Length: 357
Ligand SMILES: Nc1nc2c(ncn2[C@@H]2O[C@H](COP(=O)(O)OP(=O)(O)OP(=O)(O)O)[C@@H](O)[C@H]2O)c(=O)[nH]1
Ligand SMILES: [Mg+2]
Image (cartoon, rainbow, N blue to C red; front, side, top):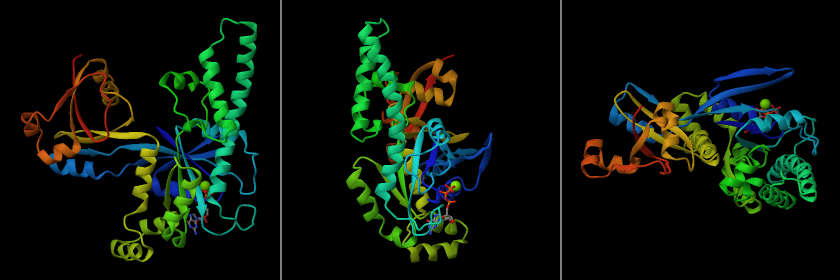
């Protein structure tokens, strides 16, 4: 799972990237281009809590990778390089960093703050790229249909037409509710606008206090978009303070918890990810799945042998486990369920896989 930071130049992508990865990253060079890849740990107080209960030798949090992608020049209007689009094509999800702090752009001109227009621009770029791909494919498909070619696939024709209508309407393909089969049909095209996207409004302190208003203004235009706000520069300064100074600064700036935790969780959920847990004396661990994945997928995430030899999963929800306080008691109460191959794993499930190799 890899997430890419996109946005205009000087929107604060690198600041946010360094904050999220806590400066743990590597620089990747390919030709002249340079990008940075780092790992983000997902804060989860359920893991802390389970760890207090089981006192394991090791505690492991969920994590995901992210990439700091080059910015779009502030003056540009749809002339994004293919290098940029190729970088976007490589990642599984997008974090769009949107600037809500005054100052200058890379062209030396004062930046006009307009979050909705900025999001629109980023969306237009990727939607336009998808449209090019679809139009060229549709041309071939329609030609096949006319010729009565045996490779002609009506289902593909239909889903591509649906995607095209969506893009013509100015909407991202991700806003369509496609069936699993249709999703598979178009997977090979590696569309950009089907990737989940989280908009992060990067505010100065003043605008951060008005973040609800800013989020609302985006939601009015994009009702289904995942949106959150952060003040990346303030958060970075906070990360560098000692504890007492930190408490004071946060109170003054109206920041209740490190907003960065919130951004990480929003990214995780926005990407359609969930955590399940395994517990024991050796390790308490959070694992990552895509929403909708089933018990054997969970088993496979832990180890391929567990998926191959999967028999059943013993399942209890985190909340229920905490109320009961012990696995033995939960089992005696009949609270630990036995689930089969079709079970869709839920966020917060504590799993024990029964398997046979
Ligand atoms: N006032 C203010 N300045 C910020 C904030 N976040 C970043 N900056 C400043 O904006 C400038 C650009 O930040 P970067 O994080 O390098 O921006 P970027 O999006 O990575 O830029 P490119 O890599 O050139 O695309 C730096 O001088 C930052 O200190 C913020 O929240 N508030
Ligand atoms: Mg940068």
